[in-house]
Image (cartoon, rainbow, N blue to C red; front, top):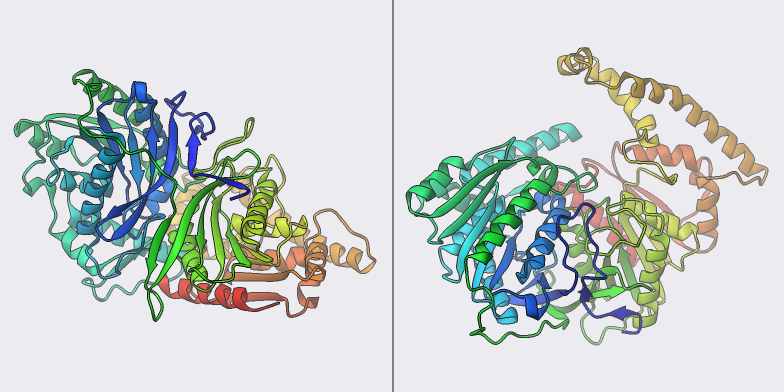
Length: 619
């Protein structure tokens, strides 16, 4: 490709997450595809220099669903830390997760993913020649690591972070979280049939998986036949100490630690998630001792295979006839630090239409609920080239020198989007380019169109900001709160819990006072902006004026909101009369029953159909 590099990133180019404990000075990180049975999995292979590589490798087994989104940055640090010790490291996505191929909705995910772990172990050996493999698993990934170790003799050690000991208890916690989320959003969950599948934060767990989990308890299973195990619990949620003692009794060299950082890593929204540095340091020290106690740099008995950046052919079976779609990882942009996954239509399709899918918050390029992956593949099946990308400093893209890591509103986002559009135009001849985004991704799509980035269509879902002042943080008072919260506070006055929080000093009364102060000022400002527009006076940060200018250039503007979203009122206030004056190429859709991230399948399906219909409508 003329404007994209291969899917290899040298460590010198790689993003070093802020506060990383240990980063290799050299080596490479390759985006790779490999097989698990008849399916394709996606992963990252981090290789130290050949002269420093050990004969023990590491495979990282992710947690599932929302926990995997939150921990993305942290797992990158674990990966880089192991590689710095000389351990070739493979982090991968299970079938039906991340960038891997799709899984049958009725499949037993627990069994399928255990086989995926074994496939990853074999792939690491094939590519690097390591003779032994350590599995590092987090939460459900730790359970999968234990199950895989029981079937794979190559696995000789385990690092288990907050492992799921009881599958039944894990399912119960997911159901509790599901009900709590529905209650907060005002929705309901159909929980009449507990044998049916379940959606947790938008991620599906099949009925077969629920049944398998309910019968899985590590305390009643034979312990894994590996000599060395490190178990790290979160000190706020310990639960594995008793099982660890069982391992010791069975003769395993097992070490147990309870350390801080678990909640901040896997239960905190990605834009606020923090790397658990004490857990990383403990893992590093334990791995260092493991390496020191073995002949780690002995002659290889297996011939390693060099990593390749060849694309993957993924079978898609959602339509009448199965089709093959090609996906390829790319680094692009002037500095080659931007990362994305390109999905190409089936061979023979005229590729002149393209879509760029932008980060939602600090979620990496798979999007909330893995929505970007499913949309990208659906749209590619309809003839569009799609690029799900990470802005610089987010996901798997690098961070520019002098810029902060994990910024939701990076100052150079427009440059990143321009680079993506240029990639699609120059490499695929795309003449019709669409930007799609949810929340902050919607904001960036709007800003790009306003800055005259050459796009034909912007599809925006639940934006909560239309302007972002540099230096503002997500903790600052937002306009979305100003227009939305005054509706909530009167209802909360009837809540005993709310009064308890207020009297206990846990409510920011000053923030509430500011909200009520700014609300009428915002309405007054909207009135004066409309007056200035009629007099052809352009004021700074005039959303109505911007929408009119975008519309005049022939760009199709589509907003989709879940009912009750603050972005609806904010659009009316900041856009003013212009919102009602624009023609057919300006559309607003409201989806009943959805929440901010469309975590439930029903409203999400409606939203996806709306944006797909708008995408396929020729402006």
